[in-house]
Length: 386
Ligand SMILES: *[C@@H]1O[C@H](CO)[C@@H](O)[C@H](O)[C@H]1NC(C)=O
Ligand SMILES: *[C@@H]1O[C@H](CO)[C@@H](O)[C@H](O)[C@H]1NC(C)=O
Ligand SMILES: *[C@@H]1O[C@H](CO)[C@@H](O)[C@H](O)[C@H]1NC(C)=O
Ligand SMILES: *[C@@H]1O[C@H](CO)[C@@H](O)[C@H](O)[C@H]1NC(C)=O
Ligand SMILES: *[C@@H]1O[C@H](CO)[C@@H](O)[C@H](O)[C@H]1NC(C)=O
Image 1 (cartoon, protein in one colour):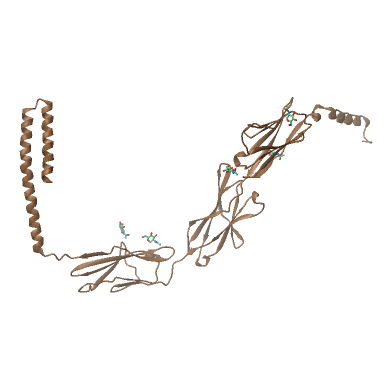
Image 2 (tube, rainbow, N blue to C red; image 1 turned 120 degrees about the vertical axis):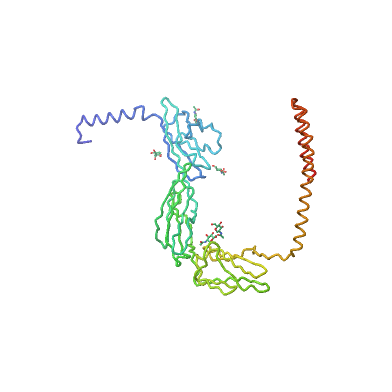
C-alpha cells in the first residue's frame, strides 16, 4: 500500500469502507450442508444462520412440505426431530432413513428478501454378500457359467470374480430399480476334471463398506463320467421249461456295440453317456412270455440304474375251450332274448304314438302330449332293459 499511488489507495479504502456498511454484509443469511447417510441410519440436517434477528425459519422436505415452522413441527412424521435451535444453528434429525428420503432439504429464512439454502441428503445402501447362481453346470470338458448377483445397493456395487488371487473378467449387467441397483457379473470358464473343488470367490466392493469387501466363496463342482465302470444287468427268469431264449433290446435304439450278452446277463463295459436309455429283456417259452425293463439314467453325477416297477408278464390262457364255448352260447342267447323283448315293446309304443299323431295333428296340445307319450315310451324301454 505504501508504494501505491495515493488515488488508488483511496479508492480501495473507500470500497472496503462502503462494503462494511452495505446492506448485504449485515443481512442475515443461512447455509446448509450436504449430508450422506446409510440406509436405516440417522441423518442430521443443519442450517447455519448468520446475523439471525428472530425471523421465521422454515425447513422443508424435498417435496417442499414444511417439516418445521420456526421450531414447531408441521408435518406429522415422527422420524423428524428438531434437536437444536440457536441463533447460529438450526438442526433436525431424521431417523431410519430410506432411499425415498433422498433429495434437497430447504432451510428458509423469511425476511424482507427470502433466503434459502438446500442441504442435499444422499442415502447409501451397502450391498449384502453376493450370491452365486450356477447357470450351466460344470461338466468335464465343457464350460461352467457362474453369475454373481448383488441384488440391491446404492450406488451400484462393483463385483469382481477372483481365482487364485487373480481377477477373472466377467460380463457385468446392471439394473436400476427404484433408486437402488441390482448388479450381476457372469463368467464362463472351461473346466476339466482337475478343476473339481477349485476355489473361486466373488467380491462386492462399495463406497459404504469403507474399503472392506463382501465376499462369497464358491467351490467348483465338476462332474465327470466314471470311466472303466461296467454295468451288468440280469434278467432272472423262471419257467418250466426254462426259457432258452432271452432277448435283450434297447427301446427306441440299437444295443450298444460293447454290450456282451450271455443268457440272462447283459453287460456293458466302460459306461458312457450314450448308454442312457431303457433296456428290455424278454423271455419266452411255449406257455408264455415275460418282459422286464431297466432304465439306465446317466445323470451328470453318477449313472443310476432304475428297475421299472411294473414288469410285464403275459401268460397264455389255459382255460378249456369247452367252457369258453358254453359261456359264449349263453351270452348270445341272452342278447337275442333282450333284443326280441325290446323290439316288441318299441313296436307296441310306436303304435299308440302314431294314433295320437293322426287324431290330433291340428292341435298343438295334442301333438305335445303325443311327444310326451313317446318320451314315456322310451323311458319305459329303458326301464325294461334295465
Ligand atoms: C450439495 O449437493 C448438491 C447436489 O448434489 C451439489 O450441487 C452441491 O454443490 C453440494 N454442495 C456442497 C456444499 O457440497
Ligand atoms: C422463531 O424462533 C426463534 C427461536 O425459538 C425465536 O427466537 C423467534 O422469535 C421466533 N420467531 C418468530 C417470528 O416467532
Ligand atoms: C425403518 O423403515 C422401514 C421402511 O422404510 C421399516 O420397514 C422399518 O420397520 C423401519 N424401522 C424402524 C426401526 O422403524
Ligand atoms: C420311443 O419313441 C416313441 C416315439 O418317438 C416315444 O413316444 C416313446 O416315449 C419312446 N420311448 C422311450 C422309452 O424313450
Ligand atoms: C438320460 O435320459 C434321461 C431320460 O430318458 C434324460 O432326462 C437325461 O437327460 C439323459 N441324460 C443324458 C446324459 O443324456
